[in-house]
Image: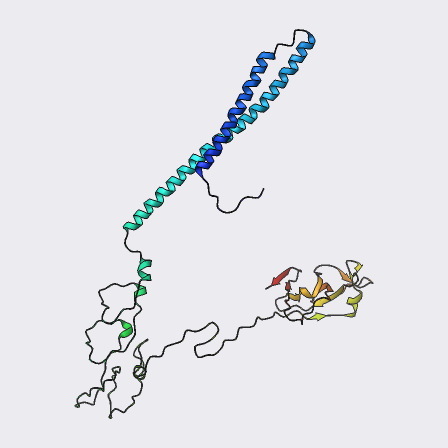
Length: 351
């Protein structure tokens, strides 16, 4: 019998109602049993005292007994079914009420808790300049900030995040000369002393640490990066899909004695031929099974000439094959089926 798969929704009141319907049939069959008992009491000894009357009375009572057993068995089955349905309906109702009560209790408990972390992460936003403080704990999802250059004149005491720690710098003159303020541009501070007047362009400094822009990078505007599409790089170069590598098949060795070979003392059937495959370095041989209607390895099978001389495979694997003329391996969309055979003839499909 097939077992049902899926969800079964139960109506407790409906189950109890079906049990009540079975109980009504129980009452009906109970009346049948009472009528049989009444017939036995009335006609059990009403057939006379002679031999024929006694024989008929015996048959009559035996028939009533069998009928009473049959009706009583049906009544017992109905009674058992009715009681089972009633009890099951009550249990379903109790389980439904318990589940509803537990669900409402869990809902009340969760309502008393604070805002879940997941909701905080969904409401995360970018931190504006001046909002970040070292003492203020933030969620990981709120640590995405707007990166910008620090303009001249901003106070150094303003707490900022690491991603905005590009600071205003100035050129250091040789000893004894005053520092020269920049022209409103922002540079990184360098320990290298300037030996001549600053030109219009400055040599880019090496990054001080990972993630900090050099002097030239700070002077250049930020470039918006385009999101990389599937298979296309940001600068437009198209990625070519990798081609699936085709496993190599074993080379075939044919000898004149193979055409008249006997296998197990019997000649090969018509359309079949014997061939030897050169194994790979791991000792296995490989064929495309779709090219053949039948491929049978002959590991351990006696292969002889018609005169009974054993044919030596010279370390190769012997197979009896029948080609499939309906297959064209050069046709577009052809899908090979590669099988790798071990030295004992055990095949392993290659996918």
